[in-house]
Length: 384
Image (cartoon, rainbow, N blue to C red; front, side):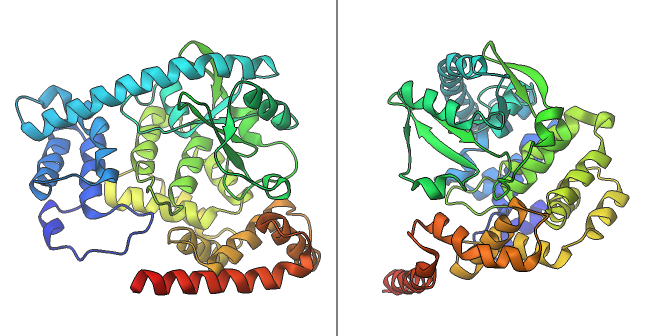
């Protein structure tokens, strides 16, 4: 656990995907035994006498839920309770609206697989309202993506971002919104930058569950923990720092039934052993998660360690052209892992043309130069 006394004097780090010191206190408040969690919450409250930043506000409902038996008259905890109740109302409304859509998607084939926050609620890992959730992440069976997307479009959903057809074919997910505010993130693949050919073993291991009465499936704990760690390591304008509580609560719920051999094998198979090891070490050193040492050793010994560590550093920071090219290259390689280096390199410009929405691979160098100039211009404007 982190030292509560050290937080006020901590040097303010760059905003990456990793939680800041104040955020770590709230993460501890939401997952530690109540007495220790209350101590962390009080330390946080002393640092936040005024307005609470958005990433921290999103952690208040879970903190209150964990400490609700001790919430006797403390003003900050009462405010956290109000945040939970407001989030609960929103969550119930979202679940009720989503249930009929999920049932209709299930009628197209197998029950859809929920991911991330929706899966945590469906599996009973967290109660409705305790986990921030702006959308419903849904993974459909291979070969049914276009059918599922067509159904959502016919049900009043529209794409949140306009995406060229060539680029959409390479995305792992697409966000669609309905006029009432319900958002579905329709996944072709569970893992960002992992849209590959063939079936995903995650689907075969998925477990039956229910979401507001709709039959769904959720990833097995081993797959879900790996997904939570991988997704949480990615930088975002709205940092997904709740990945820490997601991971800790998944491990707590699974207990001795958690199969570390499956987790390790999947991390190696997907080429994300180094990022997974980094996430697990953060959970063990910062929050006392119980991870067998041989798991960390096996992840460290997996192939591609250098590129994996470089990728973990890259995805945790704000996007850059060089970092983006690295991530695109690794995504391109993962799509066809059996291909050799040189065939993959020859196909890489065509891949970038599709992702960047240009009409020919020959235009990729010019597009790269244009993107560099755009970033330089924006940087200058930000400093002005």
